[in-house]
Amino acid sequence: MQRTELLLQRLDEIGKSLEHTGDALLLLGVGSVGVETARMDEYSDLDFFVIVKPGVTRRYIDQLDWLEDIQPLAYAFKNSDLGYKVLFEDGIFAEYAVFEESELADVAYTEGRVIWKNPLYANTAIARPLRPLPSPKEDSLDFPLNEALTNLYVGLGRYARGERLSATRFIQGYAIDRILSVLHLLEDEVDYYPDPFGNERRLEKRYPRFAEIIGGMIQGYDHVPESALCILDFLEEVYPVNPRLSDEIRRLAKLM
Image 1 (cartoon, helix red, strand yellow):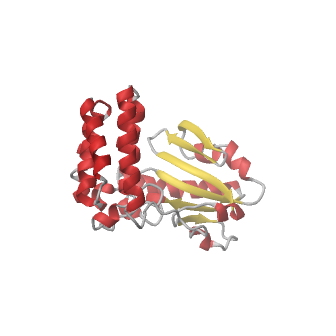
Image 2 (cartoon, rainbow, N blue to C red; image 1 turned 135 degrees about the vertical axis):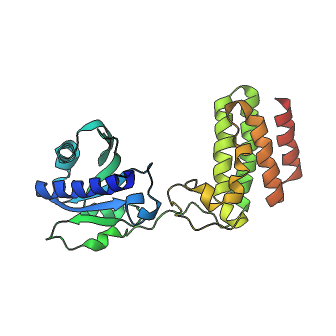
Image 3 (tube, one colour; image 1 turned 180 degrees about the vertical axis):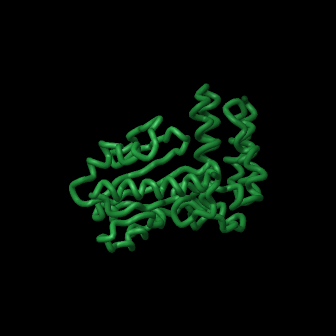
């Protein structure tokens, strides 16, 4: 059986297990096992929500028998008050949360897919979130790209001081994140499953031209100044960078 088939089968098995417990109302697949199953592959995992009757969430969070009855768990980590990350013995990894229906009104999530529901439960509209999703995209270059420039300057100062890890994060992390937030203004985006919670997701397919050059901007812990200069070159191509600040960034980079 292919990995994708095994994932979908496991979801169906979880639904049947929930049915036997008696207090579950709905199993909702989200992420790649939600409405975007076309992007599933052998590296996908299971993300799902379990909706239960009022007052019984602790039973489904504190007792994992409804999962272990399907397949033994090799690993279980309670990563929040609402759920777990688990690894089944056969290698299927899953992350889930358990809610009462009223609690989902305050949760931001992408549209889900109903895998199983209690025949007495009618609210399948719950698969569509009520809370607006966050947008990782900015509508102007000015703030994000000036932030990226100052990230370069501050990061290089920290690198010169010997704070190499902090410098790496400022230059190859924060500055890159700022660029990603306006990349749709600099390159036509290919419509390939954008993720409102992580703008770096599927970047290589969404922005293929930028993907060809980003490697020079993220050269690693031992090449922070070189990465900063590549980022600066890019920023100067797409934005009227302040010449004085540009000179200072280059001066710091050449000190290393």
